Image 1 (cartoon, rainbow, N blue to C red):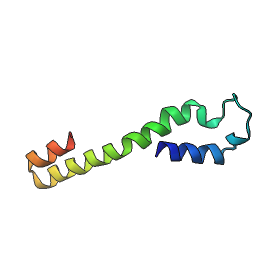
Image 2: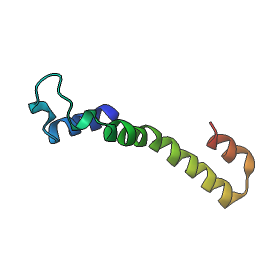
Image 3: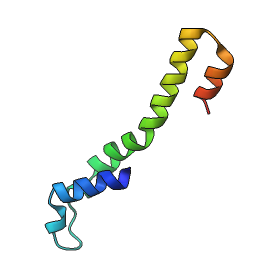
Length: 70
């Protein structure tokens, strides 16, 4: 998914119009430091929160907390 996001950034920002060797908007710290970690860690965070929600709703510690930390 990071590659898809980079592709959208590359074509929508106009980085493909620059010459080779020039840094564009997608090579900056915003994409590498903010967008990429959100895309990578997002699914793990949502799964963790789903498991913790099941634990708080049911009170069953074993399957839900164990699944949260997998």
